[in-house]
Image 1: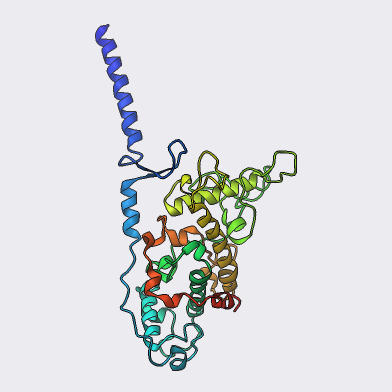
Image 2: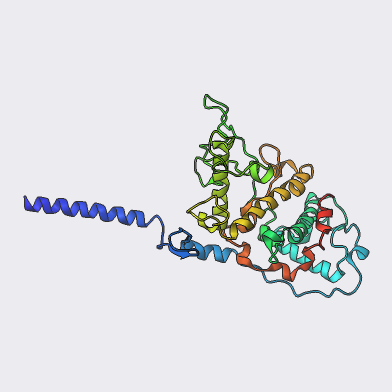
Length: 349
């Protein structure tokens, strides 16, 4: 009997040890945590060192070409059909074009991805029309949205990373892919969407907030029944967007929120205000720049509902809390920052 009891204890011990090893294997190695707020407030970031190393390596900025002199003939006077950046010198213009070729299409022929090699002034390729508009968008970001990008700024490489199409873009999704049923409008819930990290949240949290201007809200500003009209659907959309932001920046909720009071701005770190501006920046870029290109893009570059690709947090961040680990690429390419007010003017063109 004693030997049987011993064997049972050993079996239970082995089962427990197996469970521990199984759970430990879910995340390897052990997690690191960094406290960035007062003790007891839950202001802690949790990192997987292995994944952090991978993301850090993937967010290295390329080496910039040597600066070009600003003297000499202007690009707009030398080349035909230069509608943006014509005030740069020929040397500056050519340096930027060469950089763009490596940032966007190094494996697609470089310059000929956008240009007709027999006539560089020709606008027959849709990629050239899109690239021109993207230059205007980049100037707008760097000039008018310093509340989000500060003086670090962005370049074409921030999003493209050597690919003609950035890896992190979004299209509108069908909220009822299998038709309606007795449950009514599910808003794309319970669909296996990577957008919301395979959770049961709505599969398109971007249209309400990064295209439209719906209220980002989890709990209402007043107690019921005193006019609080914030719906559960709004809360689910909000959680979906927050899940996306967490995944895109490689951070948890307390990067922007104090867990004692998620809604309190007074107790939140400065990153929350930066994110607030980022949401509005993405909304403006999607409406003023991306959707205006709907007739330019060919059908095979559009989504299932016929809309063009649009921007979200992952487009620039790609797993890093600061795109390219905060590398200030704009300082090497100041021509991608339009003079104050000019970017707002070109936004309407």
